[in-house]
Length: 491
Image 1 (cartoon, rainbow, N blue to C red):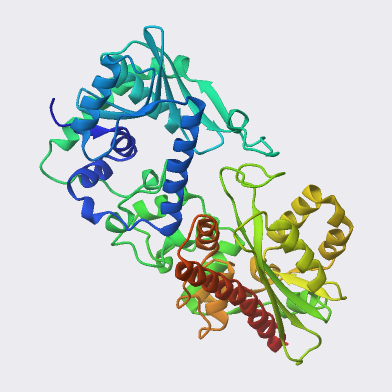
Image 2: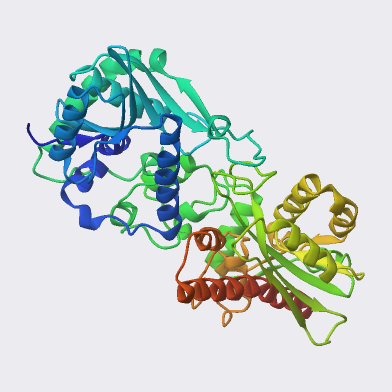
């Protein structure tokens, strides 16, 4: 039967960067550790793939263990010989490429191929993926009638039982991938030559490190790039960053005075070189005048299930499940803290908004960091739960964005490194207050952690996750309190 040199995923890695393919094949242990967020993405893709099988029920699974490709290929062949009409995870090998197709369905004497994606649209990368499948399967023992991509319909709104036929879109891509077959054959030959080489290719870093996906060996390939370099200049086009880099300009100190940087970018560079803090006192004072006591320091956390879990919810809709609220009645008075974390046993939105409105019912400024996020979530709840719309609109009218002085560079320290994210601003202003020691350190992890609670049965694990979530969200509003106080102290 022969060993495979390529798979669908390694083919995609190879056309992105030959070096990535070589490292993936021969130096797998050098690969970057998969983050919790990326693990959640992979799990989501697997779960959506299993759910999509219900579109074609009664099938049989051909691949019991993806690492045992020979067994999967043999089982696929056996199922085809037995006239099995629906096969999940069917495995095929041709021209050194192993392909595992999500779903294949027999119609008469021909087969329809279905590739399942957890996204809400079809990308060029998905078309190449499908083209590789067609190349392998059309040269195998089956005749293909059509090949389609199944993806999530983001217009679907759940009402009652999950309707998987409305949840998924099925789109034929046959006419789009037939013209790609010559490209696939040519690239297959080229990539196999890459894998037959004895040495790692000396390919320099470039825009391919990010397109279409972040390279799996980013840390290895970028190990000689300083922690703070031209690649950290805020809002600078990636091509311009590499133009600097390829001309030997790596550190911010190396940037010539005559350059194409805008005012904020130039300020970032000059502040770093001179180690100078920028303070625009007039603008800061004007901003602080928009904030009136009492003050509510507010932060939300949300999760975005690919498959809507609740009525009146869409795929990937951001569902608020938690908030933290620090409250200060007047300057110097004792801080109060209120919080909410939903139980993972139903739709959290009703209880979330009911308690939030109660906790913010008195007058006062509602201070958030990046107000577009919180305002968007509140407007979505107002739309989906119109009985709360009037009160929600009143709360929105009181929101002020604490991010403004940092976004507009009224206040900038070199340690912010061009960012106005609260994760960069906080340690720059108050170094002793950090997220590093928390069990959850950023919002993406909080989102996937809460979603996992819907399927977790270990009571100790549930308690640990909930404590980590509470500590993380509380840290966000505590950070806002400290940042606000730092602004006040400037005056």
